Amino acid sequence: MDDLDEIKKKKMEKMMSEMNKPPAPSVQFPNKPVVITDDTIDSAANQYPLLILDCWAEWCGPCRMLGPIIEELAREMTGKVVFGKLNVDENMKTANRHRISAIPTMLIFKNGKLVDKLVGAYPKASLSAKIQKYL
Image (cartoon, rainbow, N blue to C red; front, top):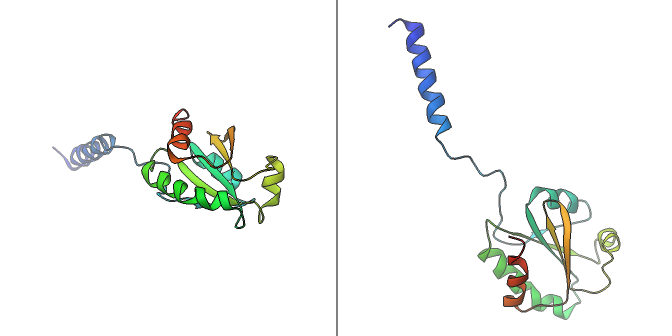
């Protein structure tokens, strides 16, 4: 076997081992809610296969009650769902664009498209069940 054949053999072995490796995940799924703004909402909706966007405000009591539930679900559903938080007082453009007139409102984006809007504070079990139908 000459040098050229040896190089070809090594190259072929390397290519075969690369083909057998599992693909690296193309999307990172954070295990806590990510902060979304007017400037990042479109890219986030397109980046994540399923994005649940919690639209809230600091002064909103039901929003503060829902916050810990969103955090728990983000941990429990890591790898399947990404949760985002959008402060409507600081991001009026998005609130107006999606006609958010009551908070908390959760916008559900699947593959970059708005597929549902949930208004109100839901118990954890109810919210989880509503999200399951989009998985």
